[in-house]
Image (tube, rainbow, N blue to C red; front, top):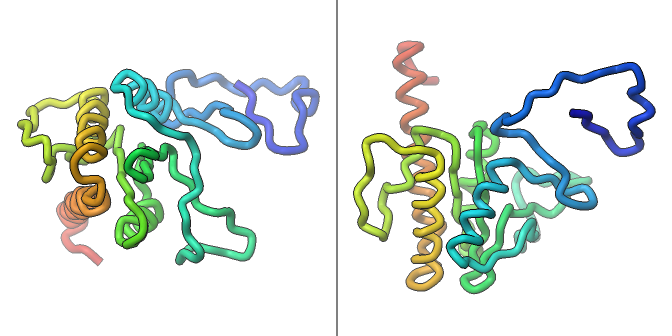
Length: 191
């Protein structure tokens, strides 16, 4: 695998071989002019298509200002936009504290319907507060988590799109609570 930055060509790397690591959860592939898509986003896209959910990719989120904005910042984008309910969907794999802060802020914006579709963290509970009222299996696969969340998105589109942000915020708070408990267990205190 060869990763090129803007202004680089394959000839810049003649004689240099980078190791291939197929199947990485966060592996990114080119989508089109400057956009990239992860394997996880590809998996979610396939489930959305299979579930007949209409979506658009990489839509800008309608914000004038945001806390992480810098002079050269680009307008924030979501991974998928569901036009029939105006829901912005962020597909997340590994969760950094920075990403969690951004998602929390976006969930709290009154003019935005924001949904966090977490596809790789075992401690993310896609059944918490779910309007689907289905039971949480003891053992869940990543695919089951994605399918649960896509079913929920279909329900939200048809029944209550305005609750997507609060639903995601509750799950994010629960996930953060679990991480803080883990930290406290390992270190004896949280600070």
